[in-house]
Image (cartoon, rainbow, N blue to C red; front, side):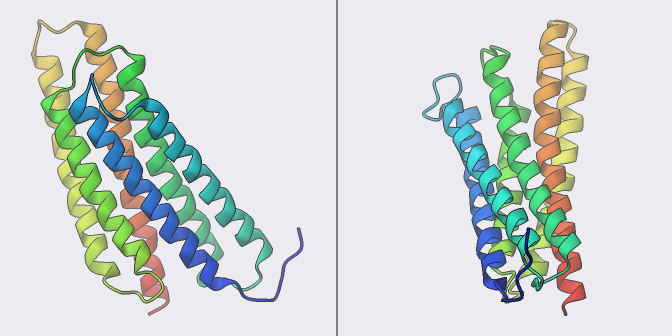
Length: 206
């Protein structure tokens, strides 16, 4: 693939803004799906379509990266940021898929709390990505992502403890919910990884 010397740096910012908006839509749709489950207005196919769109955006970023000699920031950071955002959406879709795949009758208090925290974290990530070109409000948003990730860790610990403490719960149900909590926690962790990369970009280009 041929590299071009004509800078297309603005396209990177536009694609990352699209990636952030897409991740936020995935988080919000999945939160609605969990909250309204089992009679949700959001189908798994809706979340899957968003995940497919995220894959396309990631592909577009990597393809652009492979054809550009001049990039707005380090190539490694561009790649790592793109894949971290992609992981956020993939893991959100996985949690949504497992909810239906496992045939669960209802959601739990902790799952709803985790989904809400995830939406808040992705809102901050989306805001940081939209402000990346001008480095506007990025650091403040990144601090918030870390705070939400820490809060999500606390909720997951409480959720897992509650599952194992109730001897009346079917062991298979425990395993299924643990898988869902792991996916939601993984999405939050990926969000924090993306925020970490953004923080490095801001420092390097200050």
